[in-house]
Length: 206
Image 1 (tube, helix red, strand yellow):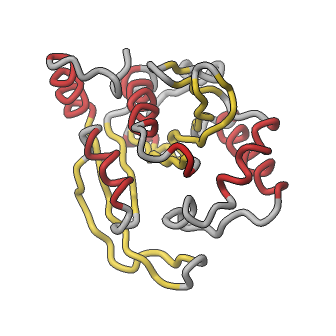
Image 2 (tube, rainbow, N blue to C red):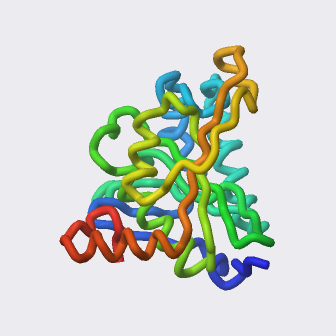
């Protein structure tokens, strides 16, 4: 069994060159709502955009409850010099018997195209592999989501499966496909080592 009791004693705070990852707080609801209400942000999320501000509070409460129950950990992403929430990322599903977790993430549209999610997920993966004892991490994306695919591939994920019409998307009213990506700890170490050798440590923080 994956033992996260030590890693989850207190909510872990992560730092990167540009970012500060911390526990989501109720005060973040005001910044979270416009992000999760944006149809472009939610386009590939598999859930409809938020319609009411209270939904952001409910989501934050759910994230905090999952951490308290040691069922998942999801960080609020902020800039180092400004604690305003830009998005969230983390392990929303733990598959404890197999030392595996599924990663999820979203980022406000204002911050797209700056490499911030790659940087944030680099820190999250390091925590998962070194502190939680994960053996592998998976990510499931909508195949047309090219930006998400690029983030995953930059971090060493490879596509291992493709499921046809395996979920119903209430936003579009259609059945959608899923591309399943995976990253093994051994491959993560190789990618990390190669990045360090060429000085590319921005997205793989220590």
